[in-house]
Length: 253
Length: 253
DNA sequence: CCTGTTTATCGTCAGGCAGACGACTATGAT
DNA sequence: ATCATAGTCGTCTGCCTGACGATAAACAGG
Image (tube, rainbow over all chains, first blue to last red; front, side, top):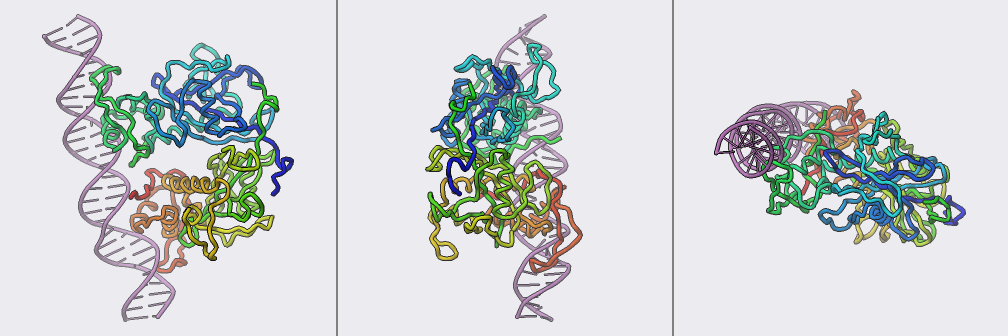
């Protein structure tokens, strides 16, 4: 098997980002408006080319920083409270997925706390958070500003769906839901993350028992807050545990 | 962001295969001996270049057939008993992972029933099943034929480790363990699959209760067999269920 | 100040599932 | 016949979960 450059076809390699957060009780994804063909004017996932000397995770983190200013963990690096979680999602390489050329895209999944507002990155494309429900609903009607929602560009609806499903299943058996929370958070805020990501209502009492009873999941900071109204709630930080055992199963039905 | 070909670096894209099976109570992976530098003479995962007009999964299935003659499911296609399961694992793109050029490899995971014997593929490289324990053990001593085991070529030890971990966790909450079994199998054979993949001993009685009590996991064929010795055991086929709820948690410790 | 609303937190109870393990069954080997 | 091997059915106990009652601590409005 000679590695003669003429023996294999050249590919372009990109990273695409599924950046998820929870805003106003809804799971939202970051999308950018395309400024040029193909799919001009349509929404797409942020992303870009991998540079010649750059690792895939590095490229994803760079694109993330360029688009949002977010710092991401290196996937194998230390977990820093408040930083975004980044992991590789999957790779999409259908020969026809980009009409112009053969592009293989390594999608990455980012889970971020609610951000003040996405600041457009280096270039002037518009950027916004959109509820994933709207983005994935084919029939979907109209956006908040009355504008018709067209499906995402390229195969990005599929990529987004895969990312959402990964997030939904991963918070079951890991402590990743805390990546959607600010550095300090209450049990109720964490519960609202689960409710938004899964789209279900959870019993506050059973949820409280479960998460506070799982060793290493939450560590109390000692402080309290009333930012959610009602009785003051204890503040917690994410504990060291990454795997929940037993897992936090989502209700069936 | 112009898609001018000079604006991005060209990559070679390959697929690498982590092909796992259970032989003689041990989880084994398919490895091929490299016939040329770099890593000449070392064992490596099977794989090859993705063709210019070929999807990633198609390329993986083609390489699998070339190396082993195995038919694999299309990842989204129907499940056929006895065929191998194929799914995308992860993508590896460290700039230095191949000393010759920039290669991005999309690794795939294949779970196959025990095969008669690997028949070398189109080319004359030697192919064999090796216990993953031997392949991953850095310290590892000597192979069956007294030959010193060197680490796998490239970053294949890492890829193999990721594939094994995926298989270990995936049989917990899916019915994928049946992919390691022949079309018809007994509860005991399925249990030995779990024991080999997890490297633990399971209680035959509790295991039997669990798997026969999970709806859709196993369907009895009516036949029995004594190929394992002892009392005749009922034969089953894999049922339609793909997700096990509740999951089959592996013992901790 | 009192009352209603909201959110947090603790407790109770019944059902289900899993681990530990006893008992019995049906084959082949000696 | 006896043993060894594997399979299958039960029992019991403890843990976890879902359903839900009750109390606590804040705020808003009269």
